[in-house]
Length: 230
Ligand SMILES: C[S@@+](CC[C@H](N)C(=O)[O-])C[C@H]1O[C@@H](n2cnc3c(N)ncnc32)[C@H](O)[C@@H]1O
Image (cartoon, rainbow, N blue to C red; front, top):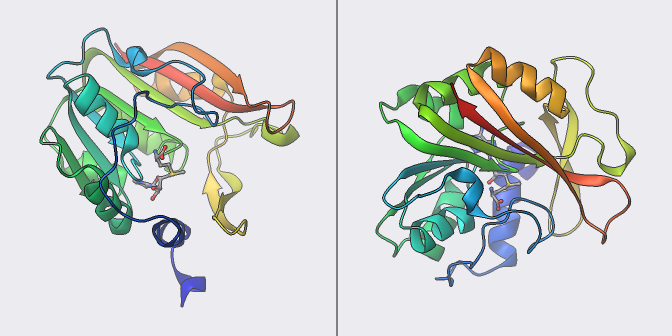
């Protein structure tokens, strides 16, 4: 049965089995990289997030959205493809009244929404997992002018890989707690290629930073991009 399920469903199921779904303390930091405690925090989303509407695409258990809602007073919405992740996020942080979790595909959520956001972000979430030529224009439509899109993705040169040389997705894997891996498609672009796709969508790349994680190897592990709506 599980062999036919979506890799992201299996990922959520295994994570749910590995850790209890109970109320959690809200994290003190926003994490963009593979190494907790390193890299920037929520400040890259804008100077003042108090009462601002922020949207996370691919929120998983909701730690970052909970941080923005609690520490910054943002009105945060987290969307995740897998209902089980949303259930888990609600059991961790459902008590926070400026935080909403929604189950759905990031693109379908945006296509069905009339809302406009002060910041949209993804932390190893839907950006890179959904065709950028569809997702980035949909994001641009729902971002207020001069507001920020920020996203981190696995670095295209992680472990010595080569970034993709065209606009098509490549094969990647979801790692499960038991160290097995399930194949997924990923748009593994370098900063230059993200710049091209952002520009086509009406978004202006404002920074591209790479981060290493000394626990792994000498290759960068995370690419963090920020962009602004023109
Ligand atoms: C690697 S996890 C990251 C979760 C979270 N952002 C974090 O940092 O803990 C990727 C998440 O993206 C979700 N996801 C994958 N494809 C998606 C899509 N098309 N729309 C919304 N969420 C998606 C998965 O279900 C999973 O929870």
